[in-house]
Image 1 (cartoon, rainbow, N blue to C red):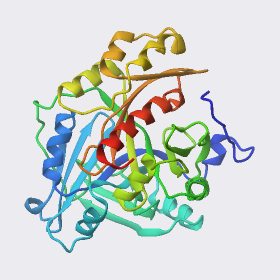
Image 2: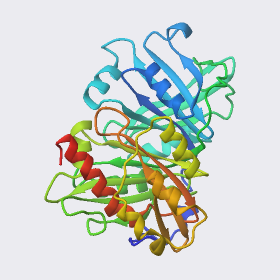
Image 3: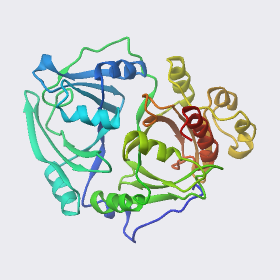
Length: 378
């Protein structure tokens, strides 16, 4: 276990705690963007195949939407056609980023009823849309900032994504980079709001708190933050929630909140079964990653011990490693994937460990501070 505090809200089992709301998986993440077509090219370069499209050609007069997939990861990339669409104001205020976290459920009506009864703020009541591929039901509630949680019931739908989308022909030129799923989704919230959203995830969605990192664990000489990790009953969905802590200078969380103009999704952790080959391929395709000082790797073998991967490869690629009682993990973080220093990606491979790399926090945060200093934001 990481050097952190494991917390159980009560004596109920994980299964009992999540009984009232069965969440099956992350169905997709919906991005609101300035230019979805160009963003599609970016994700294609990372190995995501376009599989669905909605826009003027399909009768959608309000916005364009491109759906890209790689194994069990699905993103919907949306951009408005005009300045009066809510997406236009949203991207102007927040920049490109994740608007909606969609979760697959067996029964949308039940999920919406249970979550709103427990304090979830309704945004979209349960509704059904259909086409020749069958019906699909959705509903949505408000999460932190302007982020939404959408419930999706697609058990009777057999289309490419949702009604209103057309299938896209397979593009053999798009080669997978070995990304297989979403490991966790990290949200940044304002100072003093972390516990509010921890309680919200527990009360409204039935999640439990599994880890707590305070500013004694996550700090450098100049800045600090606090984080609590929430997980659903099955353990398939994990949502770390960060808030800034007092430090000598501006933390990465404060920088995010300033440029995002409020809370939101800070980063998406994507699973790989072979992080060495995935990272090498992504670097070859131009994706920019953070680097920690080479001195980090001098002590790594003694700290981590025997692993299946080559330490030379890890150091060459800039991958981080950490070990706990259950095993070890490997992880690497990108620079922001848009001009604002907000959303970024994490690539992670787990070899038994279910932690979040607490042993890497200091080195990682110091590398982030170097980037902040380059931007004039430290």
